Amino acid sequence: MARKKVKLMWIVNDAARKASLKKRRVGLLKKVSELTILCGIEAFVIIYSPDDPEPAIWPSLPDVQRLVTRFRNIPVMERGKKMMNQESYLKERMGKLNDQSRKHLKKNRELEMADLMQQVYQDKGFDGLDQTQLCGLAWLVAEKMKDIRKRVEYFQQIPPLQDASLPPGPFPPQYPNEDDGGGGDETGGQVVGEPGDGRNNPTDGGVPWDQWFTDIINNREHNVAG
Image 1 (cartoon, rainbow, N blue to C red):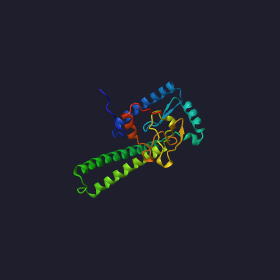
Image 2 (spheres, one colour):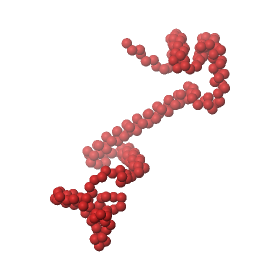
Image 3 (spheres, one colour):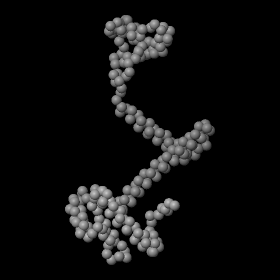
Image 4 (spheres, helix red, strand yellow):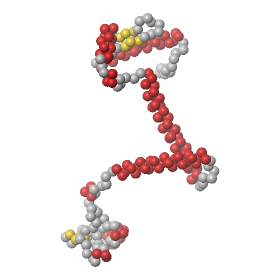
């Protein structure tokens, strides 16, 4: 049978509190001893009990004095980097819990507004909504706009694909525009299209994509390279 989880709170009963202190103190000293053996580190423990005139010290008083002296010789800035007392631990813990609570509240509000928006779609109107619900929907729209702006900024930072990275394939031939009198740059009997682009823009007077595919289908002997 699994042990019942003990709540971390002050034990009101004096006898139970003293028994828990005695039992857990022995367990703590044992764990520290195992930690020093397994990991090859130096550590010491000093436990002051309200009913004992002398503190419980491990491993010995000379070792404790030596380690305390070594600790005090460390510079103050270096010493306080990884130190944490009960107050700082509780503040850090409360900060994490507050962040989680805000995330859950935001998620719940988004789900609530999404359900409300679904009701609006079904009823086809906003007439039955009060001011609080309308403000909630406005908040949801603002949050979605923030996400869209973040996505746009992300894709704007991505460099465009180079022509060398595109797979080779047949592109529709470029025909000269009527404005240039039937001329155009030709290399080896093949008309060259726009610089850096093997495709033809349907709006520049050339052959659109759909027309080019139609010609390919109607004429199977059509030579694209030519």
